[in-house]
Amino acid sequence: MSSVNKVILIGRLGKDPEIRYTNDSTPVANFSIATSEYYKDKNGERQESTEWHNIVAWRQLAEISEKFLHKGKLVFIEGKLRTRSWEDKDGNKKYATEVVADNITMLGRKEDDEQGGNQGGGNYGNSNGKSNTGGSYQDNSRPQGAASTGKAADMQIDDDDLPF
Image 1 (cartoon, helix red, strand yellow):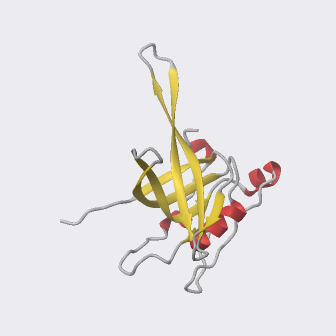
Image 2: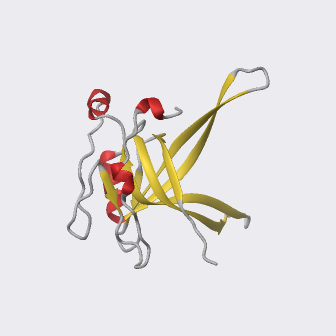
């Protein structure tokens, strides 16, 4: 039996992406997004629960993230979960679970970006010479056999449909 490791999130950036470079000059961007859900407590009052997700973007997707994603920007993230482990200076084992982004789509209206001072999205070409639409960029550097539907770019989401 095969397995599935797929994450789909829509949320807002908590701060601008931080970019760094590996020893072989590969760009890596790290940022976090917040997702919220609402529920009623035992008294019937509406409560909000916010979850923060750590996102990692590699190569061209990292460069696109640095250029166009800013604090407060609404994004659609598609990727997979990865858990890293390491030992701290005291020898304690530490873990971090992150979403490795395969696809990032900037959501929201263009006028929201202009009013907020952020740069708007646009169409980004990928490495096979074709272009994606809807302000989406897909990382095509994944291994062969891993497929993407590209349907996120066709998704129409209104701000009123979002729970935050």
